[in-house]
Each structure stands twice: as structure tokens, then as C-alpha cells.
Amino acid sequence: MRSDGHGADCIQGLFQAAGRSDVNVIRLRVLSVLLAALVVAGLALDRLIAPVWSETRARQPALRLDSSLTAAGQGVTLALLGGFRALVADATWIRMFVAWEKRDLPGTQTLVQLVTAIDPRPPYFWINGARILAHDLSTWRFEAAGGEAAGTAVEQRIDREQGAVALQHLEAALAFHPANPDLWIERAAIQLTRMRDVLAAAESYRRAWELPRAPYYAARLHAEMLRRAGRREEALQWLVRLHPTLPADDPGADRDVVLARIRDLERELGVPNERAYRETTGGAR
Image (cartoon, rainbow, N blue to C red; front, side):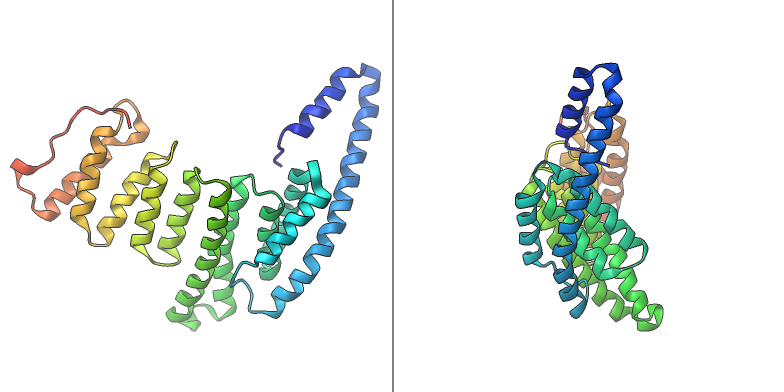
């Protein structure tokens, strides 16, 4: 499980300060404190989840994020959790996984939302929560509706509904992690697969690429989305601008792949040889 590091540093300091004969006693005391904290947090979470759970089950499940749940979760964090925020968030994530294994749709969605309300700092919770909301819950709902027998229209409606929930989840994540390109990349994947909005995915991949430490493939996927949307000239211009900025000594930049896509687009668009892109030496991004 994660840790924010502060608790671990305190515990390590206790061990270093103690004599060898006292280490086992200290370990038992630390373990007792942690277990007591988990029990208290578990009782608090049960009281918090119960009314939200009932309300969620009363509605059609998994259609929207409940802002009151987020506010309630933050209140519990401030009032009860204190330095145990990361620990309680981890425990809540484990509870969510148990609900996920049972395909408990309202329980899974409630706990996905709750864990980020308790501790919004780890991108892991946001990204994997978005995947669960967009992909797993849409699959469960479609199967519950009859699967293939329900028809394409039902499948697409469920996909859009769950995609909207996941995108709202990621929108909240960006308030805490505005410079994280992985959130924009996840946003693009959901826009493409659930919303079937190629241009929106193209824009999200572009936004990801503009951020520090963005993976090179975000720039390539921006061009690919433009090509799929029929905007091949725009895709070609993007790749022509991109290619000279890619470092030649970094295999991850895939300069050869980008050049091959430029040549493909030039053929598709009938670009004459005298106007074709001339490869230049790779440089810094």
C-alpha cells in the first residue's frame, strides 16, 4: 500500500532511538496504534457510507458523481483522519476492490468517489478510479441489461453515461494535479472509447503533450486522432513540426515512426516530391 512517508520516518526514528531489546516492544505498540486507528476509521467510514449508499441504490446507479459525498469525505478527513489520511484511503481502496470483485456496482462507485475525497493526492486513485467508472461499470450495466441482446443503442447510451461520470471524476482530479499529463491521456482514452469523440480525444492528447514529462506517444496520438477525424492536412502539419524536435538518441521518441507516418500522410494527400518533408537532425523538445 502507499504511504505519504511521514509515518514511516517517525517509526524508523523510534527504532533507531531504541535499544535492540526494546525494538519488539516498540513494534507491538506501533502495530496496536495502527490497528486502533483502522478500527476507528472503519467505524467512521461505515457511518459515512451508509446514507450515501442508500441514496445511490435508490437511484439508477452509476450515472453521476455526488458532490455532497465529496464534501462529506473532506469533512471526515479534516475532523477524524489527520495524519492517518493515507492509511485510511488505502483501507478504503481495499474495500472498494472487494466490492469490485463482487461486481457491486453502487458500492464500487461510492468507494471510488470516497477514496479520492479522503486523500486526493495520489494520481493512482484518480486514474484507476476513472478506468473503473468508465470501463468496468459500463460492462456490468450492459451485461445486466441483457448484453448483446440489448442492442447497440443501449450499449452506446451506457457507454456515454459512464464516460461522463469518469470524465467528471478526472475533471476533479485536474484541480489537484493540473500538471499531470497522465490524467489528460486517460481523459483522451475515455473520450475515444466511451464517448466516441475523436476530436475531443485529439485535444486531450495535445493538452497532455504540452505538459512537462509528457510521453512522446501523446504527440503521435494527437496526430492519429486528427487523421481519424478526416483532418489529414492538420495531422501532417503537426507531425512535420514535431519530428525535428524529437531527440535522435532517445529510442522512446520513435523518430522513425513519426517519419513513416509523415510519409504515409504525404502519399494519402498526394504531396509532390518537391514539397515533401526533408528530414532534419533531432533536437531538444
